[in-house]
Image 1 (cartoon, rainbow, N blue to C red):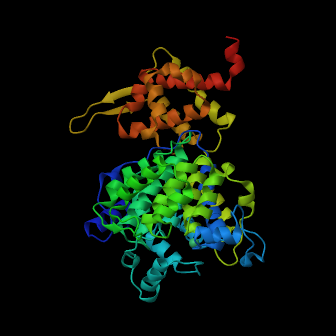
Image 2: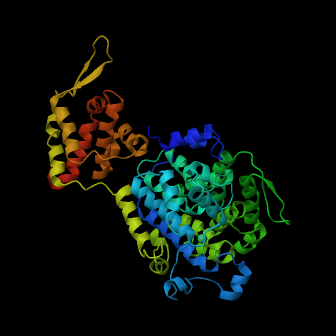
Image 3: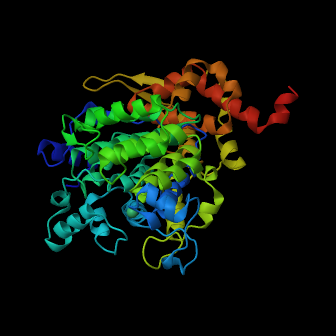
Length: 500
Ligand SMILES: [Mg+2]
């Protein structure tokens, strides 16, 4: 039997095979995206990740003071030996593994952890961290399964590549999003901090995609602490810095230190020096959140600060880049950084990342095909019939030994067929569609809605009828369906209605 990822996560939790606190957080559904949402937010998220990585990679692991002395402030790609000496954006492990994740999602239509582990082991990884090396030794050289090969490491190597796991969920957000984040994380880093940080960061990214206004500086810490606090459990992670001794859960460290630094108005360099900025999540996570809190309103400055003011700068800038990209979209990122990317995920597949982003849009987003005038007319031709004073959608049938059901008239059944045949019934998260509920409760609001909303309303009522017997009949009897069709006619035949 094929397991879905929620069931798989539940099994791994029950068997103690995943380092994660079982929590009701994992059962919550993420909020749906707003109706006018644009995929360019996801483009921004993935490009921001690639840009941060490429800007940081040439000076990865240099101390900020050394880097400053050698290069001044880095604001653009440095000349790169892998780009013929030209200043171009060359990827490292962060971009590679994030886009290979997207590639796996596209190939299989969903996260398949076994397939993703396999993919990670197929091609050379540039600038690989030690945990990934240990994962490959276990999985590839020693032949262990993907479930057994994740290392108990609180390094940032899973967090850096986690962003794309949310892409298959854009249309239909569900708790499976958290399961995907946890499973994708544990492939290489099966550790409480890594798994909790990956899920908490996926939630932050999801909210960034949804937000229409910039969040307050403290929002980043609030959002992280609320999620990670539930998922991390009672852990004992230790600071590596003698001047800042700490032992306890990461979320508590972040809660205390990032808030304090904000209060003291430290520069990003001062703050990141205080808690250090290496590949250890107890350092990476406060750096990411502090940079976002200080500069989340300015994607260029946020990425520049991450590149210049931290030690593990390619990864920290990739994570910051994903967040500001999700918040500001592709158009919010400097065009020179996007055009300077080689777009490589392997040695010689230049431009690949742009292809993958476009495929993701076609596969996981793709707006509904537009309705033609013929589609609309085919549905509107039912309106006169429904407007007749003696119209009834059908009758309730009660038979002994079975639940009562609603027997629709042949006209109503033809109408439903016509909706389906003319492209009105498109998948969307109708159960959580708040605007739709308001429109049912207050039909006067229908006067202002557009054709797309009417289409969604009709789809929602047809769908709801499958779950709640007689729903559509009730919508007919209240006059709601007729009002939807009348509004559609008003939009479709504006002149006729103006003359009376
Ligand atoms: Mg890297």
